[in-house]
Length: 148
Image (cartoon, rainbow, N blue to C red; front, side, top):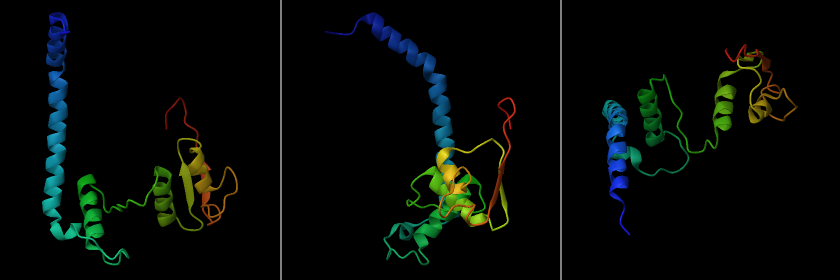
């Protein structure tokens, strides 16, 4: 059973109408690919950065180079790129424990954080090893009419 001419013509029409969107996506992909390739050249990423290591991560040139590359690509001062981060909450907790010190205050400007982040903070309920237990204060501001 062959497709009808009407269906084939509809397909052609849809593809023609979609072409500007596909061209825009292709342009974005090309821009981002060139950005990454330029960053790889600037960071001097080479074959040696993809070799295996002892696993102890002391002066691991591959990991250090990946951190440098990601920072360059995303315009950050530094980056920490690890497959061991298992979730967004895990990553955010790592950042917060890394930059906050006892006596500091964490302020949420979008109301209460989501459930697993509340556990990290330790304010919705007591949680062992939380920021609260570490001496970090917490406060939050509610959004007004859906805006910060």
